[in-house]
Every structure is written in structure tokens, then in C-alpha cells.
Length: 500
Image (tube, rainbow, N blue to C red):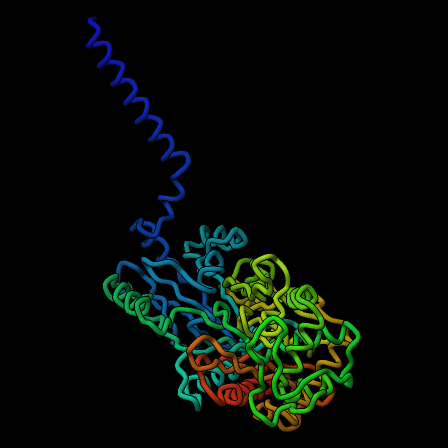
């Protein structure tokens, strides 16, 4: 054989070798990926041969599968529509799952290893194994009120969020993001309908697909003063300690003065910490923050949950909806030294401080629960298709202890004063002790955001609900409206607390 033929033969052998290696790689390593791909039509048909489990709250199903006459035997539908969209997520045919539909897909689809007994039984009976049912902690009444009050807020705001928790357990009582969306078109078996609906939502500048309760991070304004107050109480300051205040104060490194929201707020040279919280005294807290120092303030915020990157909300200890990290931001000069102006602004929840509504609710819940912060969760139980087999029951778990019970008690009294005598009056609930803190947060050239964080205690002093309401770009009076909505949500959660 001459040299050219030998070279051709060698090339052919190499190509066959590469082809053989590629086939083995596909069969040995990529088989599961191709088998389970959303683009594998046979997989889709097989998946929709099994009835998907319900997602329920308070005995009502808000995600169900209905039988069809098409090739895909079951259609996923959402009776709760936009009201529950961000709490539940959605299950499309050709798009990615979201929310609880994604986190609990194995149980809902009936493919979890824990359901092997059901599948073996159905092999004998010839039945098609149905998926398990996921029960949520939500209070239907609180969820309905949160959705309606946000949508019909008196400031005409179109973007915002509300989340309520049981402070004793971390169970989510309500979770609403505004604007919301109807998940039903996204689950359509007609790919054109589903794709068109998704593209319209994705391109909407209002961002209806975004879960603002868990994923939005904005300056929290004066709600952050509770963190600053906690740091002060741990460093020699009491409720009755007088701190410097006044109508205006200029940090030593900046010619820009810090003022109060109104001339009537703490014009005195000194005010007690109690009055500073009640009146929401910017000048007092700015000077207090500089006195405490950046390291102390950042560490206290971290202890409350700021900077946590791995928090999820779903089943305890399992994957769920990811939560954006709240941040305190930078308080330093270019050379690394502390910038008093940045520290002063940060102490009142401005500058680079950013917080999610969930973090706000966790702060309020911690104060209400004697300083113990419980891990938030949304899934209370997972029941088999027969509803008699219990595969999971939530067992509340402490996430952290940011403050002592004594510091928590002092913070509670100051937050209660802010509702009874200060800026949070709209959150009051007859027959219950309510504490809270409003926040009006400047954010560039946009109208300020309106915030409220708060809690409700029953006549025995037992915490029954903690809440955070955010109204984006609400302008003047936004925090007062947020407080009013928060009071309505907590009232509904008291009447119907949901599952634990």
C-alpha cells in the first residue's frame, strides 16, 4: 500500500474512533439529559400521562391538573390566577418551571424516590401513579387581602410587595408581588399561546414575572433604624438615653446636611432613643450610627440576615425560591478608611443599603419573637395522592438569634410607640398590640419608596404575625399607606393564620 493510501486509511480510522467515542459519550453520559429534556416529545407525553399533584393552601387547591382529550392527557391550571402566581410559580410545557412547581417537581410529578411504593403498587393494579400533593402555609384570607390591598392601594402605585410571617415558626402567611400575572396561558398545551404569553410578560417594563417579595432589593429608609437601634442597645444605650439630634446635622466629612422629614420632628438638641424611633429622627440616628462605627453597624445587620446569599423559601432545608441578599453596602473612602457621611446615611437606611421585603419581615418577626429569627418556609406538608400518606411535615427551625430577649423587648416597646404615637398609626388593630416602623426611602431622582415593617401580638403578648409592605416610588405618604395595608394583612392573618 502506498503512502497516500496509508494516510487516508489512518484518517478514516481516527474519524471512526472519534465517532465511536462520541456515541459512547452520548449513551453513557448524556443519555439522562436527552431523555429528560423538555424538548423530548416522548418525555413530555409520558410526563402528562400522570396526573400532577395539587398545590393547596387552607384546603383550597390553587394548582390542579385537569384531564384533556389531547395527546398530553392533563392540563395544568391555576384557579387562583394572578393572586397566587408568585407564591406558587407555574409549570409550562416547553419553558422552565418556576417557584414551588419547580422546587417540588419530583413529588408533584410522582417521580420522587420516596414515591416508589406507590409506583410499585400501581404496577400491580395497572393504575397510573398520580403525583403527591403539596400543602402550603399560606392563609387564604391574608393572601387575598394582601393582593387586593396592594392592587387597590390609595397611592396609585403599580409596583410593590407584601409578605407576612408567623414569627413563632417562620411560616409564610402571605406572599404577593405587584404587578402579578395569570399563569394559565403559560401552561397552555399550545406552544404558540404559551410562548406569546411569556414573551409579553418578559418584555413588560413593569416586570410582572419578578418576585419582588423575595427578589427586589431597594433602600429600606427608616425601617433600617431598627437595626441601628439594636446595635445601640447592645453598646450602652438605653431607651431613655439622650442622643444628639436637632433639625439638621452635617457629617464631618461632608458639606451635605442630613435633615428630618418635617420641621416638627426632633428639633431639640437631644432626644431619647425611644423618641428617636417614635418620631423617626434622621439626625439622631445619623449621629448615633457614626458613634457606633461601621463595623458595629454592619455586623448587627449581618446578624439580622443581611449578606446571606443562600436563603431559599420553600420546604425547610430544601431548595425553594431563592432570596436575593440584602446588603449594607460600602461605608468607606477610597483608601479604606470609614467615610462618616456614608456611615451616617447608611444608619438611616440610605446610601448603598439595600433590603428585600422578606428581610424586612424577618426583622419585625425577630423583634416580636424575643430575638429568635425562625427560618422562613412555604411548604407545610406533602401528602400522597391518596392523601393518607404523609411524606413531609415542616418542623420549624431557628435560623439565628440576632439579639437577646431583653434587647428584643426594648425594640418591641419602641416599635409599639411608633405605631401608637408616631408614623405607624395606620397599622393599629383593635384588641391587639401592634409595633412597627415606617420608611420613606430616597432612590435617586425617582419618587421615594414607601415601606412598613411590623408585628402584631395578641392579648397574652404572643406574636401572631409579622409583615413587610413595600410600595415602590410611592412618593409622599407612601409609608403611611404601606402601614395601613400591613395592618389589614395582619388583621386577616389573625383571623385565619394558615398552616404552620
